[in-house]
Image (cartoon, rainbow, N blue to C red):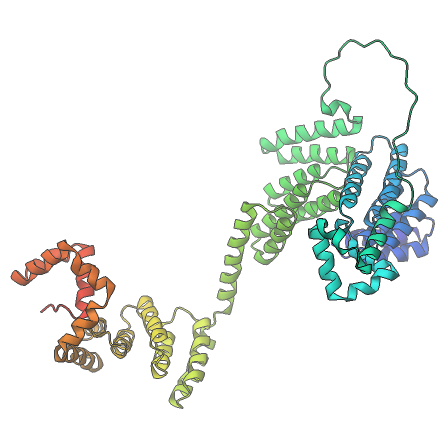
Length: 541
């Protein structure tokens, strides 16, 4: 039976570490059923209940732990924690003080007392800012029914955010009753504890001043030795003597198992050794120990970050994102925000690549072609769009979709697709022709002419390109005044014509057409001349 109890206890510990609190409670309960006198099982279940926000059950198990092992400081720590969660600060402090009497050098108990005192002070200033306010109100039959009313919840938020308005809300019986419930646990259960009053001692002669002790000198021997091991480990780590560093860090953990830093250092060694799974396991253990011993939230964040780094090294982008987000929930830093942004890009790119399937792209294209023939252009667009997602580097899918957009007179979308076609394949002649037709429909004859010219450069005998080119040329020559008005309405054209240097170049070109070749060597001038050519204001023969 002892083996079965040990196995259930270990299963509970693993579940607790993984955040599966209900599962941990189940394992501990089964173990207690086999060994009801084991104080450690009640202590562990108390921790699981606390993490599952079942604070009354956590308190009951803590009491049972103490009854079974009255001289064990851990039981009083469990009791103090549960009472603090329930808002019973005075009783919580007394429980921690009792544990400190049994273990005077326990830093965790000392820190817990200071933390609960701070919580009590904050609650006195504004009871509505009390931790776990909703659990307390739900536990009282008077206030439990209020929580179903959205107006009451809104009122609570207002009182938490602005305690100055409490006095103006006291005429509301719900507020009066709420304060009574919150204050009853915090201040009315028992008198405030006071520091023990000791009779004054007779004055003693002042001792000779002693050299100040370092903070380490005030620590218990085991903790001092642990720090020494850590320093030795750090020295070995810097020299990349990782096995030696591990020996020192593990020794530090043996001497002081409550310090999260030593566990994080071990994880750092595993990370350097590319033992990423071991690194993750060590960080998870560090988080558990840190939570248990109320470690600085920045250290908890560091553990989550290191797990994220490990998953990133293993190219498990989604898990890396999960742990970077957990780190941000503990402590926000610009570095982690940047890492999250990079990870998001990687995840999207991986998803895009995973979706690519040229065979399915062709199937979607065939379906789109059939819908196009049937005149169902919206349905055809849907199939061509899916083909693009399945194979985004094939220009013909964009070209086909551009044809659909043209039929629906969605010229801006069609033009965008044509530009993508010629970007992917500048020799895709149909892309230039489609672009020319869309620009013609948009009354941009000069730009259409340029598109047809590109097509004719690829195939001088192409009938569609020749017809489009002649059509643009005829349109421009048949109504030059309309072309001029449209061009002069373009702010970019106006800016070019106001430029004294460009005016001089245009005059020079009229007098000496051969000067054009020299000017085209300058990219800025060539771009401006191309704009004037597309607008129809000038023609080059």
